[in-house]
Amino acid sequence: MDPALLSAEPRPAPSVSLPAFEGPLDLLLHLVRENKVSIWDIPIAKICLQYQATLRKMEELDLEVAGEYLVVAAWLLAIKSRMLLPRHADLEENDPRQELVERLIEYEKVKATASELAGLEEVRRGMAAVRVAADVHVPDDEIELEEVDVLALAAALRDLLERHRRDHPAALELAPMRFSVREKIVELFGLIQQARSFPLLSHLLTRPDRLESVTFLIASLELVRLGTAGVHQRRPFAEIYLTPTGLPLPEEALTDV
Image 1 (cartoon, rainbow, N blue to C red):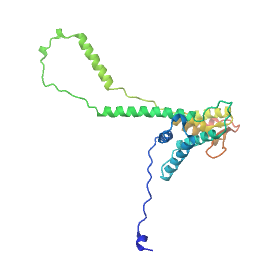
Image 2 (image 1 turned 45 degrees about the vertical axis):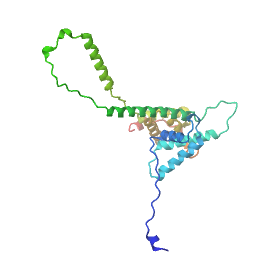
Image 3 (image 1 turned 180 degrees about the vertical axis):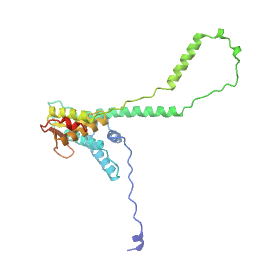
Image 4 (image 1 turned 90 degrees about the vertical axis):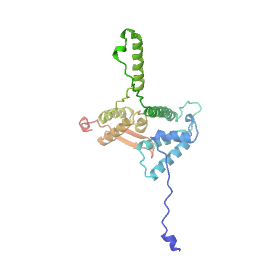
């Protein structure tokens, strides 16, 4: 063998570039646009395969795949499974994609609004206040106060205040939402007692706030640890069910939560 070939340095592996996504819904919206399909008629099987392929690429690039991506992946698989089931012609059944479509439409509206607000902020940053300096000094004795129109002064002051209000909008303050693990444990315990077989993943997907979903997940782990709830899953990536064990919820065990 040629010694030059032995001493040659190995070629670097080809690099793969992935666009940055702000969350699982952003990735889904990107896939829908890439396939040039309507949000109201999503080819769920094709989108599901492309979504999983993107997650595998993220793992190959040593990118951290957040749990919310995996939750949505399980949701897509559940929708795909439901669509494969036979449907009865005499029964009106809801489209399994309906909730996914509604969430994508709401996310698209929020994203468009955020883009518009970001554009307005950039325009506002590019604006500079104009300062006019008057070099001509008017002596006080040349101003005739009797000739001043009070109504004209009031109208000028009103216009000035209106321009100031328009050019200096009030800051938007959003109070952060806080969720207590103790309260969610009590709430989840009551839901498990009522449902007897409570679908945990489906419940997490209905929460409007990400922090609330995380708090519910921690509460479910605490219930399992306390022995007041059991957990089971029929197959990988399927729904996770919580079932009551019959043991009461110990109040003293919640003091450290």
